[in-house]
Length: 266
Image (cartoon, rainbow, N blue to C red; front, side):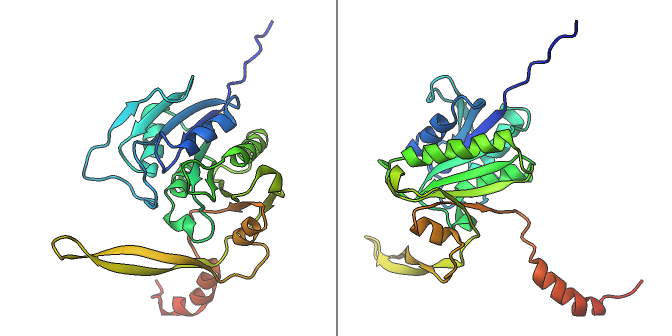
């Protein structure tokens, strides 16, 4: 009689940019506990705004930590992207079935996706053919209420494990700062055209040397009702599929008709 093959449980890699001890990553672990084998590899300190930076020129440190009951966890001295690379190569020794990044303290909607260490970790995973999701809550407080974020993180992960979409999948998920009962559901959106109008405040240190402090405000130039900014303002969880291919195909199509005429024919 043939032996029945036991299906292996999925491996879920969890990382973030706020550090391995942040409340957000603990909430994400608890949100998906029981859905697979969870392994945490996250920075040993906050790495917000690091984007897709990697560490070169200095050694990386990787240490096991006992933070999440019953779950293997490691802290890394590098960036969120370093964490994903080391997790695949040195901790898991294989590609996980899913990579989750977050839950970030603060939004990563619109242009924030470019600067975000949270989202860059997710992008790095997708580059390695690991479907990924970055989760962010629009509340910067360390005492933020993550109950709604946990609920929707689990819903999304359950959907992806049940029905995988694409090995290069990247979802940018933002949860509004609202009571769970006020949230109206999820909206699949596009990224809004918005940016920070920045200002550098000039100050002087005790030695009278100048230094600058970055300030500014977020400005939305997009009036669309299909954007992540609109969804969040109207108490929806925004879900934006993003990609690491930065090619502008529309402009490529336009200029290749004229610029290619200058190429030498062989």
